[in-house]
Image (cartoon, rainbow, N blue to C red):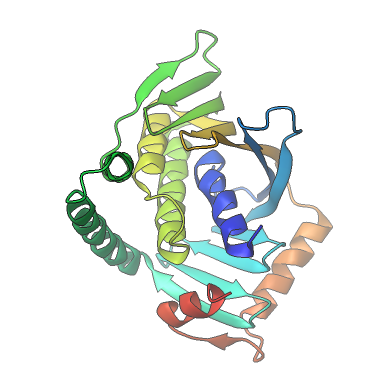
Length: 273
């Protein structure tokens, strides 16, 4: 699998699957992403990605070893810092910049819908429906009777999410903020990902219910029936190894081997392969 597609598949689940942001506490979440196609149900689900997220001192450090990329979420400074180890390249992007990028991307998506609507083909109609739903999602929300899971259904895509109750409403709100920003960053940084709208719809619904997701299955109603599942292992304290990782990551930010460039150059360089 192409490394950029691989990363997008991971973030497609990770940004809406576990983003509990109780920043007063240091903890870690280890995530595995599984892929399966309805076209080959007999094949065992493949682990396509693994990630480690460590919360420490008010920041979240997301590390994806397979692509060597570190993403640091800093809500106090209202920005992300992104570092690519293979390219020895880094950048920062303010939350306000992400908002502006989203406005431009939304306008372009709407223009694209207008252009392809002229072709009047079945394929164009399916593409239009897909984009329009992502721009203005409206899932049918179906909680299970046991109260531990919730389904989000639509003709375009669906989620099945197993949850736990958030410790308090502040934690539920912190989750939504982190997950929303992560969805927006991923769409801007990795253009092959879904438009953030559906994920942000899910995030808000979970916040309203004070729920935290612990397992997420995403069903894409595409030609092969793609299913992606994220599972999480949570540890509510940090090991000495975790703390050493944080020190190493902090040292990278000061390492003169890494060149810091603007966001657009970082994006072009990392996605060029």
